[in-house]
Image 1 (cartoon, rainbow, N blue to C red):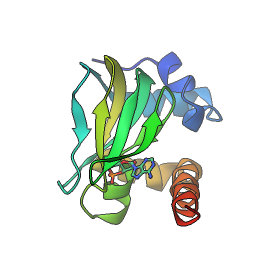
Image 2: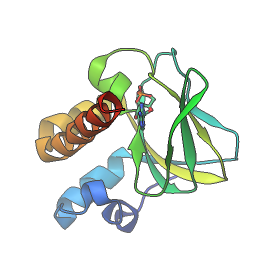
Image 3: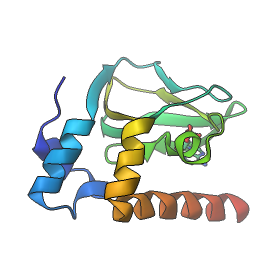
Image 4: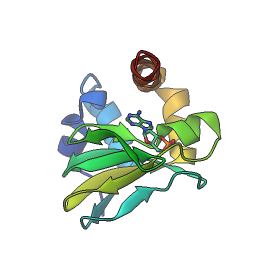
Length: 135
Ligand code: CMP
């Protein structure tokens, strides 16, 4: 399913981009609708995609422990792509949900052409790590 520019524009991560950039990014994403209970990432498995939540909620779990609940505008799945390691957590839809998906190869293109976006993503990883370190 093609992704419209308006859908990309409403994602906070991409809100500062110019219209032509939004168009390019829209062309890189695919939309996926999932039912409650669908696992988008599985802890310990290899992972090749990055996700942005359009609607619905997702639980992030590590070793069976709930780390965080994510909702519209939140993104996940960046760690395996950035680090090349396996999925650090299992992310499960807790409601019917819609996500925008990007494969690793397109993520590299994002890194190359829009370093500002990737900076926002890495800042989020650092923020999350600091929060975890602080308890
Ligand atoms: P990745 O490791 O690729 O797949 C699981 C995803 O869960 C991970 O990327 C992050 O996007 C997300 N994630 C991991 N740990 C946390 C956390 N503590 N809080 C929120 N999201 C997390």
